[in-house]
Image 1 (cartoon, rainbow, N blue to C red):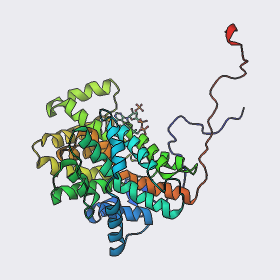
Image 2 (cartoon, rainbow, N blue to C red):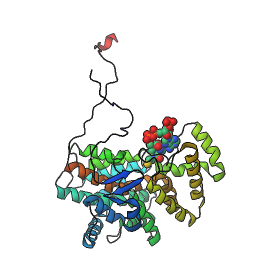
Image 3 (cartoon, rainbow, N blue to C red):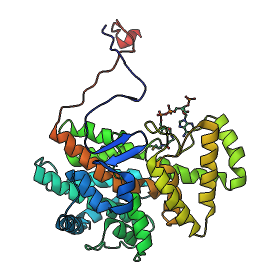
Image 4 (tube, rainbow, N blue to C red):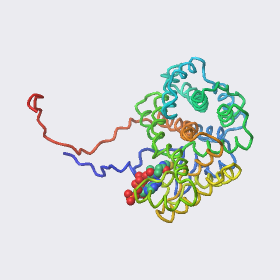
Length: 375
Ligand code: COA
């Protein structure tokens, strides 16, 4: 039997699976299309960054205006889709609901099976514009509240907060949320982006690939960690309990959510930006203890395990201070990351070869069939 060199059960660590020009991680520097995340977070907007991810350059004024107008035209859900969504149960995890909602949305998309560049662009706009609307729709249906129609001339960040809360958000709140979306938009060959590329590589359609991305993001080792971070902070309860709580958790070999990273060993640059956003947001809220607790846990984890916070750690307290329900933290990740997934799907289509790796055989050999009566 052939034995393959480097057969792994190690999560493809260190394996280069494709070339990509979307985002890069070099040491502790994350760049989208060659622009550092710090530069973009300080100067750009989510929509402008989406243009960059999809077009490999920053937009001119009129190009950004057109993208905003395209999103505005597509941000509302069609009545048929809303009727279908109302039938779905809401006592489920929001990511499971979102996965089904996006799949359902594909059934109404006239371009669903059209793989032309034009149709893919139209689907990219629809999926990106509607993801926030879907998440807000879930929240309102679950709470038994009337749906709030989005406004076509507002940004995705503004509309999400508006539809979620039913009141116009403050400029400061929109700015913070917009930066969160920008920070989460893409991240090289992470688990969900890889998943979307694998599905796209069979030349399946964009909705199918995005549904696989949502499924991958849902897991607690990936996007699901941000929700678990806030649950951890609540479980600990107060700063006095951190040390003893950590003694027990580490002795039980628990994974502490929001720490560690496969690629960054010297810190996740997004966590640094989110840390100052968390300080600002929590100190302005009625529960400033979450930032203080986060910094103590951060310090203890570095001292005891040499592990640094990742993107999910400080984003949790930012979202919490904004009054967003805990189980909506990961769906928010999807609201942003759908744009990165789309960039990956389009890149995959543009130079496609189907993903088909091999598995190193690790099972029985030379078995002979015995009839069921003789077993
Ligand atoms: N808490 C406690 N220990 C951790 C840890 C964490 N968050 N992250 C890694 N470790 C430990 C592992 O237990 C392992 O220790 P060991 O060698 O003694 O067994 C070692 O560090 C290496 O971790 P490993 O799980 O092999 O790293 P990975 O590259 O496979 O996984 C993550 C990376 C991100 C999945 C992992 O760090 C993790 O599970 N973090 C928590 C979930 C999370 O925040 N995910 C969001 C990622 S952006």
